[in-house]
Length: 507
Image 1: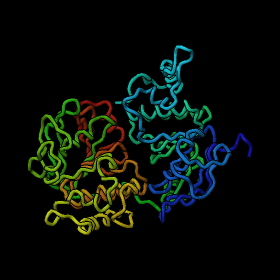
Image 2: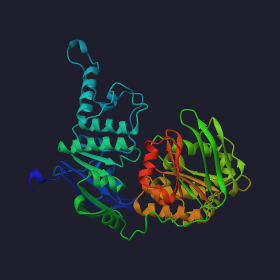
Image 3: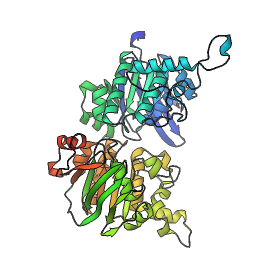
């Protein structure tokens, strides 16, 4: 193979195990210069393990690993970075008290020249180079401002600028758009294309097929820790990719069944928090799935958190099954019959180092304690029916939640709250970051729960999910509900119109 066609990154039959658990059976990936290569697969398919081998987090057990045609075996992340590899994660980890420039040049800040400079850092040179980097990427970020308070999108751009300053030849973007708005995604894609045009190699990991088809030129599919296929994006379809990912036929992604709509369960009237939302009134009935739609930052999650009592509110009332729910009191909301699956399952929904059994039983500990004591046996006895019902894929309830795939973590969080036998389930971004097969399972579960009379308030940034699962769509714009649209009347056009332009409530 000539130098011109030698892949920047080449992995062949790479394997990695952790004791008896095989995380990667036969991972293969070849990424050329000047290309954006999608890597897709269900949660647990081996994508993250493969990336961590390239990043130097793990050392492979077997197989071939080449960079620029040369065999490599990184023993650390520092070795990987020195070789020109950069990984841009979904949630970057910048130093918040340092400036943007200092974050870019951390560990390699230039010193001034000349006798009088001594060992002083040349801040002027750093700021000038940071400014040039952002100009090159076509973005506007003040290099002198502190990193604290920056959006996730800006933090990712800073990580990319750092990679470019290190002359990285391979950039891996791991679910970079999960927490971004539409405009932020468009900006990130523009940056990615400019890097491709410079001749760099990019790997793009995403569960969002519309992004894969918009941005990438090649797609590699993994399943169960093994390589399945590589295709030109222009020569394949979403259904073909999905079939390869799951190895089986996936039923309707939105298996919504008709449920009998009953009495009002949740009644919210004139809810208001200064600077967040105001005049918010809506109801959710038994057997009904109500979708909260809107742009990122519109106030959807803030409304949900106030209803459940995580956040305080300034005015308004929340009533559940005809009884007032105390404000700013999650325990009171739970006793009243509310359950809340938060957007960030790892930070807010799970004790990540706790076992599956402990997590599922965590909200009902008072029910299963005897004389103030709780045994592992009582926890597992309470957790087992819910783990089985949600088909949590784990061999034992004592497995740590941290070791599970994102889809199974989400099932554990849902199981934890269903164990409380709630009247209302509030679920924020129910399928964010999970694979297409598990998405269908979660959607099926929500439909079944509604069919059993549970009232569900679902917040989602994925419009197809809202349209596919909701009986009614409430659209939130700038802290106000601007539309209440019945399922049969909801379209992408009228939902987006209410989310972006309309300021008058429609029905």
